[in-house]
Length: 122
Image 1 (cartoon, rainbow, N blue to C red):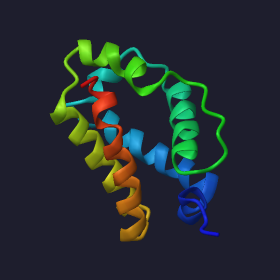
Image 2: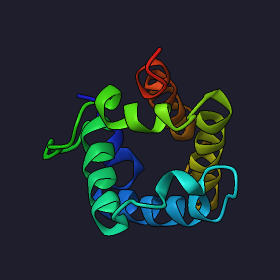
Image 3: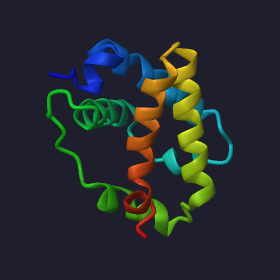
Image 4: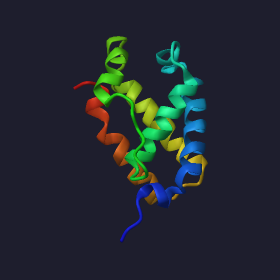
C-alpha cells in the first residue's frame, strides 16, 4: 500500500517546520500580511498544522471551519486571486527551502490548488 503524502513528506515534524516557515514568509509579505492583523497566530499555526496533516492523509484532528466559512470574512476584505497566488507561492518556496522533492511539492501544490474556489468563495 502506498504511504500517505503526510508520511512521505516527513510526518508531523515536517508539517510543523513547514507551517512555521510558511507563516514567517506570509507575515513578511506586505501584500497579504494585513489579512492576519487580528488573527491569533498561535491558534492559526495549530489550525494550519492540523488541517495540513489531515489534507496530506495523516491523522484527522482538524476541527476548524470549512474553507468557505473560514475565508468568507477575508473575501469580504478583498481577498482575491492575487492573494491566493501569493500564499501558494510562499507555500512552494517553503517546501523548496526545506528541500522537499519536486514530486512531493507537486502533490502539495495540487492539494493547495484544489482549495482555490473554496478559499475565494467562487
